Image (cartoon, rainbow, N blue to C red; front, side, top):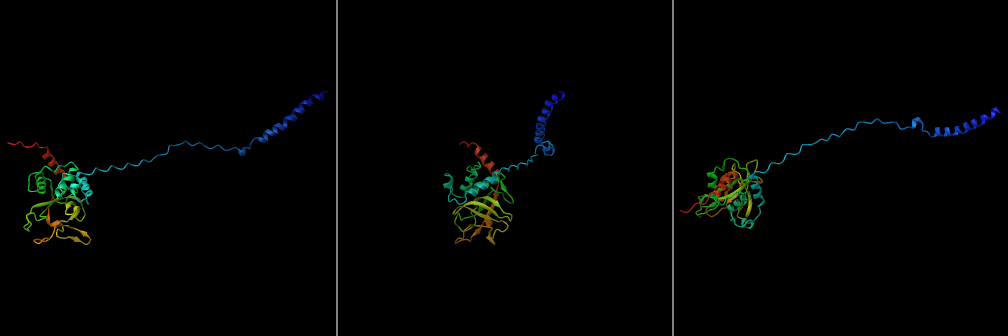
Amino acid sequence: MRSFWLIPILCAAACAAPRMAARTELAPAPAEVAPLLPVQNATAAQVAYKDAPAPRPRPSTGERIARRAGELVGRESVADIAPGYTDDCSGFVRLVYASEGIDLSRLPTRASIVQAMYVRARENGALREGSPTPGDLVFFRNTYDRNRDGRRNDGLTHVGIVEAVDDDGTVTFVHRGGSGIVRAHLNLESPKTFRDRDETLNDVMRRKSKLSRAYLAGELFAGYAAPDRLGRAAVAQARRPPRRAR
């Protein structure tokens, strides 16, 4: 009788043993467990900021005048660009300067507008000594035989606008020539030299005639005038009230 109470216990142990073995087989081996990776503190990536390029300086009044003059090269007539301007060298200069608010219409009374421009520049200290800068006026004398006597006694007769100055001193200027608005060259270091190798130093400014030979730009050069001072003078002249008739 004593041995019968052991039977249920042995049966329960026999049934529990397979279940425990099954659970043990399903559990992963210690070597198969994924290792824990150390967590590193995330740091913000350093962004390198480059210095913004410095803003380009605004072109000067002279540079803007020179650029505008160059844009008109190839046009045949000043009057076709803007009605109201004479189709000659002075009309071209007045047109370009007016684009920068410089009024060259009210000038001292002289034999010609070119002479009046020169007088205005001289009276207000605008005449420039030495090398010019872009936008300057460039004056010439005796570019044609105004009084038809075959002599170089015609005074100031032509004006243009300096566009650029090369390292060798050659000046490129824009003017209203016989065939329209064109570029020409001037070199005061070699005033009587037309061409050096493949480069033009001085263009012909007075054509050959029966009474005189041809003359180059360097031979007929008269002076430069700065636009800023000339502009202030012209504006001041324009602001003056008209004189009352006596």
